[in-house]
Amino acid sequence: MSELALQMQMKHDLKSKVEGLKNILQSTEFDLKKYNKMKLSTADQDTLSLTKKTFIIYKNMLKIYFDYSNGADATTQKGYTYNRITKKLAYFEFNTEKTENTISECLWNKIKLVSDKNWETL
Image (tube, rainbow, N blue to C red):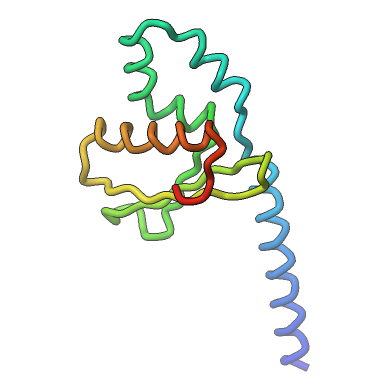
């Protein structure tokens, strides 16, 4: 009887995990129109440079999510973003010991790849 209860619990846990993943997938989206509108309206290079370095804008506008599965104190962290057009997740890693400018430059390069719909290797 306990084996049956264990199997039922595992099935329930698996269903919960799948539901959670479905919810995450639905909440992750890449809004290409907003990004292109921002890019076209930003003629001033200083403003564009400031925008590149703003970590929060990346996260809110482009829906970049950070996965702290390595632990909050780990030097290498992972992140991902979702392309609705190709229905693919793009993963990336970054080293938290690097400077803020280096990390933002790396993310900006990945965002440019995303905006060009080049999702082979990010």
